[in-house]
Length: 80
Image (cartoon, rainbow, N blue to C red; front, top):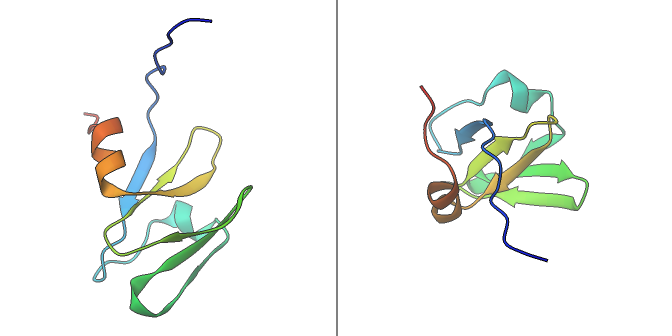
């Protein structure tokens, strides 16, 4: 038992805003749209919702999942 720090990992992310399309890597995932800009994402944990303003992340193994803006900003920073 002890304390651990998350390893630095680079991920791809896209913000769900009502006026933009989505990246190719998101098209390859099992996703759908609902009225009001909601994007449904099929994950190993079931279907998750990305509301307007949420970030959608593609992880290191190609997994795709939504992330609330406050959690995203606390966890990630731009690269390059």
